[in-house]
Image (cartoon, rainbow, N blue to C red; front, side, top):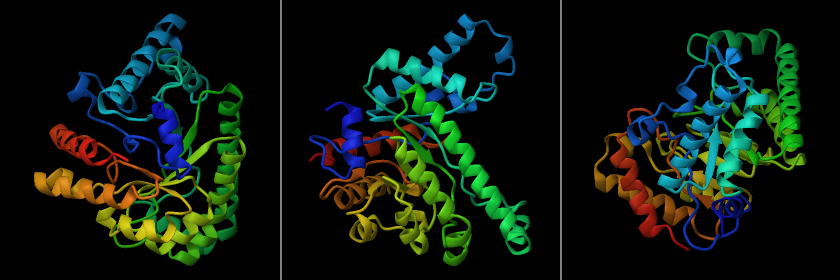
Amino acid sequence: MTPKERFIAALERKSPSGRVPHFELVFFLTMEAFGKVHPSQRRYSQWDQMSDSERRLHLEDIADLYIATADTYDHDAIFIHCVEGMDQEGDMTRLIDVIREKSGDQYFIMTHGDATYALPGGDKLCEFIYRLADEPEVVKADAERNVDAALEKAAIFARHGGLDGFALCSDYCFNDNPFLSPAHFGEFITPYLKKLTAGYRKMGFYVIKHTDGNIMPILDQLIECGPHALHSLDPQGGVDIAEVKKLVGDKVCLIGNVSCSMLDSGTDDEVVASARYALENGMPNGGYIFSTSNCVYTGMRLERYNLMLDTWREFGNY
């Protein structure tokens, strides 16, 4: 099976042959690994002034970096970012084309596609909560427009071809609880997440719903919305992959659960234990993709990520 085929098999809750599929939502350590700035951290202030050939060279450089990351760290999927300064639709579709030209249909390609309300920053949280109380219908109308706009953009990708799915990256949860009560979540987020997911699926896209933190009080609503997979099953938020597998493993693919806190500040033995726990409880009956409980973020030690991968290579085989 190709990496893409293995990844899709897991999304469809099957057991791929061989090793458990693996990817990271973002691998930020490209400077340490390859001596190049990660695409999401680049900014092209004069993109519109470049010649077509110069833009093409930049797109090729970005594509090469994504492919090198996937090749080096055995990722089955590539998550592409819209670089600041580029045209979101036109340049993103061209980037997809370049990746496909260079790697064929080898990798599952996805991009960000969430349009639902996320946990606001600390300076905006109170303002958002006031709006829920003072103008709930306006908040809902805005949510509807945001989803409609996202689906219009997705239709461009669908017509163009080459993109396999979307990762919905709006975070909903603190480590202790969601930022809204389950009742408010059901009023202001669930209907719009359900519409967004259904729209993507109707166009033939796979949908991965990401959120950190404690998802357990809203797990049933997330499943109700119909994503193919949940990421990142955050142990720092008290999410136990064994419990989630028991509750919803027959309904959704699970991705993640290797503790970033252990990768950051734990011992080597704790890293191995966290990786093995995720594998042992995620793998049975398929429907599991191995990854960290967030991403490989700036500041993480590369040798710790390599240790996690060594554990996966040894114990993550069907």
